[in-house]
Image (cartoon, rainbow, N blue to C red; front, side, top):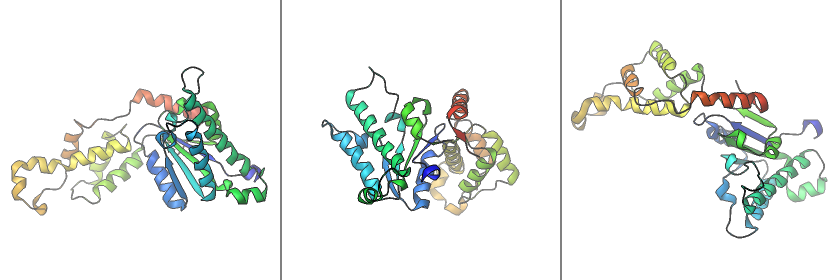
Length: 262
């Protein structure tokens, strides 16, 4: 309690394909917590007032099932900037109810709820709102304040790309040396994690493409290993999906509001 109260909100932001959603899955598995994965469609309803009840029920259930994690993927679609004219009334009500219920978690963590009330409604101290987004600057300021931890997930560094390439090639027959992998790491500068996976999948098809119709009369053992040339050929078609100019916007936002991992 007090200054040692746990954080009730954490935001993972960064360019697409860097593993933000995968990190949330890993957190759910390792923490042995109840995991609620929701999106904007999970909380919307065509009936008036039903959406706010769904938000209230979500947080109430998370308290009862504590320790629990409420994960919101692409939270910018749910808690975008509130404007006087651009938002529909029902959208504003959902945002307001979500923020109110979220504030109740922080009040409980600060010790403002009585022990009897906390027992009746579950343990609000052990509920975490975890969110991921590619557009952190589109999130409402009130929601940004509640995300006490704002973690920047950047593009993979050379060490990370090396580990990922070795993991992807670990189950495949290949003849790439350490020097070849280091060369690939240099060639994939600016690639996201998903881009590297797409590159490895395309390169793994290289030995099959080189056989042509002869592949129909061969066994798996007769197919040649993956070579560096297969990756070089795939690099002509598989290109980075993240704009380098757009990375500066993430870096600037991280310097102003967030924190960088690593």
